[in-house]
Every structure is written in C-alpha cells, then in structure tokens.
Image (cartoon, rainbow over all chains, first blue to last red; front, side, top):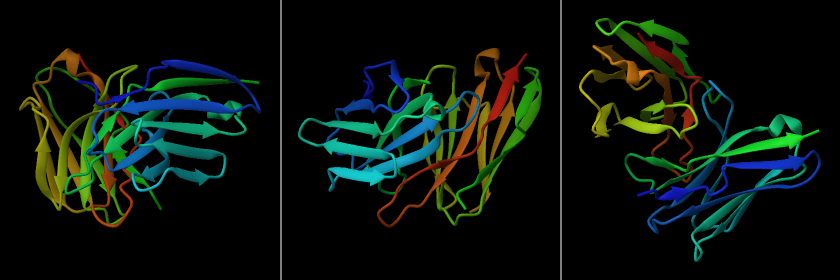
Length: 113
Length: 114
C-alpha cells in the first residue's frame, strides 16, 4: 500500500516559468511533510517542509502548499532554473519517537534553458 | 552545519566478504537512519536508531547488522551479501523534539556485490 504517491513520473518546464510538483497521501496521521531534491548517485537534499497545522510555507523560490482535506501537497518553484533539474521526492512523517519517513515515488523535473 | 558524512563513497565486495559502512553527524541529532536506494526508486528505510537504541528494523535480512556506538556514529556491518544487495546506501539523522523533523542525508555509499 503506497501511502505517499507522486503520480507524475516526470515534468518538463521552461526556464523562468513555474514548476508545480504534486503529491498525494492516504494516512491522516501524517503530521509533517517534506520535499527533497536528489541528483543521481547523491544523497537527497532537504528543500522545504510543512507542518500539518499550516497550509503554506515559503522559502525563497520554493513554496509548499498543504490541503489536508484533500490529502494533497504541492511544491511550487518560481522561477525555475536549469540547476533545478533533478528528481524530487515528497515524504511524510507521523513524527514521534522514530520520525519514520515515508517517501513518494519521485518526479523527475527537467528545466529547459 | 547540516552535514552527514559517509565512508566509503564506493565499495565493491564479494559475496563472502565482511565489510562495514560508516556514518557520522555532529548536529546533536538523536535519531539516525539507514536507507537503501535502488535506481529510479525512492529511499527504502532499513533501520532507525533513537537515542542510540534500535527502534525500527524493517524486516531487513540478518546479513545486514547495524550498530550505533554513540550518538554521533552509525555503522552498518555487511556479511555474505547477495548481488541483489547492490544499491546506494544512505545514512540520515534528525532531531526527535521541537517542531522540525527534517532528516539530513549523507552522500551515500555505492555498494556493488560481485
């Protein structure tokens, strides 16, 4: 059972435009959501997170939106840059004593110059 | 500083070898994690240590043996691995209190079992 899903395996965007990556989840006990960026053969890099008590969190070019009623979150990147080209994973956690992360399947973002 | 270091970066081992992967963090994090990642797949949790105690073992075969000598170090001992165990092994750490639960990942060890 895939508790965290990213239904778009890939996304192509022009440089300077907005990139929107989507993520859906099924577990209502998730308390914390995160986005990671990953280049091949490297560890994931933390980008931005949001607590379930918020509906928006912004950090520079990155904004994460959370819609709890729809169990949906999205990552907006504005403006997109070629260096943003990577695989993006969303992840969710119930927090607590172990902070176990459940990852989505990833979306490959390609930003075209 | 949000750095997690892992050694070695690459490792090739035969099926009868014994080797160890090492991970270190100096962020004061009290949770440390081992993940396995295959190509085009998300990271897959293997083990969680909370306050130096093993708190989650995701039904990992016994040929993988984790160890947490202290709050900054995490090892993964490997013995009698199979070729299908070839993957990128990632270490991560996080706080277990406050309002942030970000896990910070190391660069990984690329393991090839021959």
